[in-house]
Image (cartoon, rainbow, N blue to C red; front, top):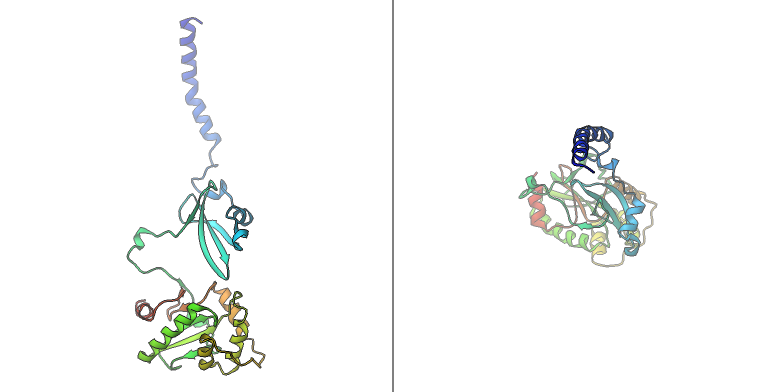
Length: 258
């Protein structure tokens, strides 16, 4: 091919490229992940369950959603009455365990979920402390939960020093503790006995429940509606919901620091 023909073809190609690039750009407009990643990436609960081999761990996938960080799925895993989060990249190759923290949140107490404290009925609660105490704290408890037992001892220590605080124990037996349901009924049927609650945490045998109370079932229904997946769960007067055990001094500090 002679040189003049090659030069002619290069000029024609150079003029065509910008037009081709513009046409291509318009052809692909509106189909990217710049705005909504779910238009490109999908992950069903069934697929997530297979990818993380949930069956092998006797776990289930409760929910799948976009994580706070782009490029990752947030998978809510349920196991033994507890829920926890793991993360999976959009390429579905890497599992990320842990949590994300906003840099602006460093050095600050964790942000807790808030609920309407006044909407939680207290008439069915076991009251530890003076019912006339100004400050009320709600605790969702399972009689066979070891961490509830630890918190129970911390509560008793607090009440020795603080007469202005009362703890309202909502009995919330988990499925993983099959005996806790009858123990909870026994405590409620026996005038919501603090003594029987002590006995339960001490591992003593409780008297068989002899009343047709629905209060335990109502507590379970309420707890699930609030998203309470484990025990203990502490609810502060301002509605902050804290899942898990904490020592007495730390609990008091959170109580006094809104």
